[in-house]
Length: 194
Image 1 (spheres, rainbow, N blue to C red):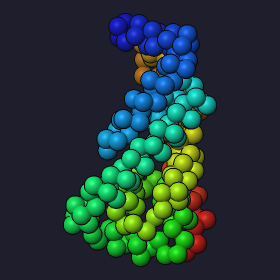
Image 2: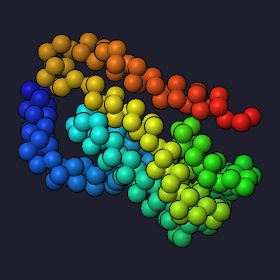
Image 3: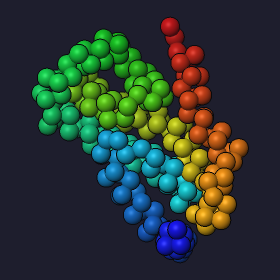
């Protein structure tokens, strides 16, 4: 634990002394990790390391870039493979999107539909313009990003966790922040037209 606490202090000192360089490294790292499905929890770590606003901008921007990369990959490189393996989902996507594809994509993002799934399906269908995909991703991921980053800012330092044990994590603000994404999803489902 002492080794971890020492390294946390070094990371925090680096972020404090060289904020732009640290942010750019984090942005590049986050973007690359976002291209790999199943790497959840990154926004919490960013909030913990960078603070609320820098981490919010970093996470939303990196996720949007990663989404556009996978969108283009599915449209130009893997479309046939995606159609052969996920044809049923593509048909459901086409049918449900109707005439207002922007609204549909925005709701998928707000409802936490799996990130990679939306990227690949939207790219493979060829009914979504790049501009629509970009703005719905950027805007739709923002509320959950802000919640997760805020939760990360509420996580205590490793030194405090080492001192107080697991009880250091039991904080009302942190618990509310971790429950908030589920509440957001329920609220969005309630306001959606039936």
